Length: 127
Image (cartoon, rainbow, N blue to C red):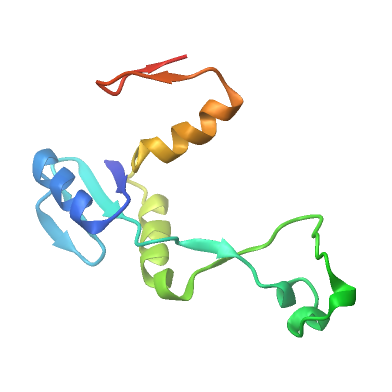
């Protein structure tokens, strides 16, 4: 099985239709050797200041700037269910690979800063 991850449900449904994954399940579609699922907004977010130290629960000018040595993350409350579904799908024994079918533009804009990358009109990447 290949797990295909889309950025939102409507894109996942379009991909699943083309791939022949037409069995509807809770949070994903499956069939023809594919499992197609999606993100819903930001699945993970930076933790609030009080996650680093309880004294940061109330803002005080003396505590600023708060610069953690290691950043903490948490699953967004509104996306907790879909995050769990994706986590379970990634752990499935029959899932052998993951296809990232999310918005490439944002990823490439970040990558362009670090490397010499060019994207042609037809979507081909030239490094």
